Image 1 (cartoon, rainbow, N blue to C red):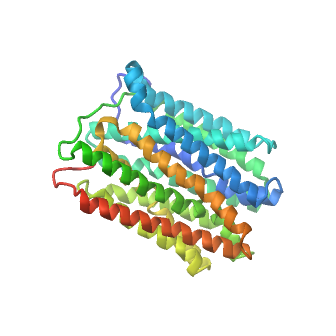
Image 2: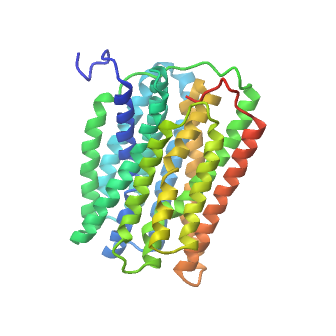
Image 3: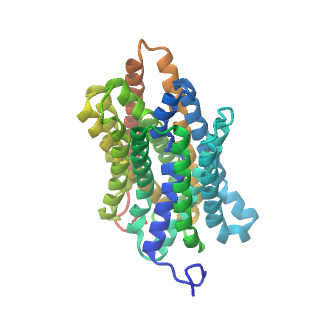
Length: 410
């Protein structure tokens, strides 16, 4: 039997690594390669800062639309149950292929089409993220290896780190942003080729957990979605504009281009650390700690706009970045194991809505501020405040709906 044979047993580590590389393509390249390439695009004169905000918004809007489509999954099951075994892997493959094509598309100097390409790239990223998360979490749980889920979410950090370091090298070599998009397209092709043979196997559906009443699940899910959406708005200002903000505060510094790769290192490191957390710990308490860490990292850019301040801030924002996603997905599987992917889509859509609001808010504040530094400071303060709201919501949820000792988020 070959690796492509559907009868070949899949090892948990192979599933986790496939998920990691898929998210590296969809998130690290499809979504966040724009951030390290933005200063290069500004330098090349192919875009200005207000236009960059709307390009980012187009991508986040696409991510939201894709997530909303995934949230309709329960309706799809009820009308076409025969598609159930293949929809996860098929959607993942479509999303990965689209990410490759659209990344290459950004290398073509056609500014009028760029908003559409970024919109479609957002949709593709959502497909890969939602279905990869649901598929990997379910497969790992069925194979008795739920702790390996943390490895999946190393993917975005890996993609961010590699794209950031690559962009730094390109700047040093004097290459154009178009060349950068081409290079990332080639990288996406290589990673997709590695993932492709492993995208097989249906996901099982579990019964609803007996320890969580149906009415409590509904109310808890709504508040969980709202709190998770706060993280979408909270991090996006920094995730989109970190290189630009650093250049405003530290003009001429040779270390400017390393803040984004440092963020990526933090993302990957934080995901790996989650493997060590016991599965019986309340994920809402862990989310509160993650939000507090990100809020502190965001505010360091305001309180301490220096080399050390931005470096520490990048790490503190990055460390809990995908841990937040993992803990939220695990909480979904605790509350709704019978239809996790659909609810992952719902939470991702709310998260995406928070992201959509971020760049226009920055653009609005910048236009009404005395200078860019003041505008970015206000934007960062608002982002940190939204994370504090999320902390309060998770705290209320944990107190109102405590987790029984026998329950474990897989």
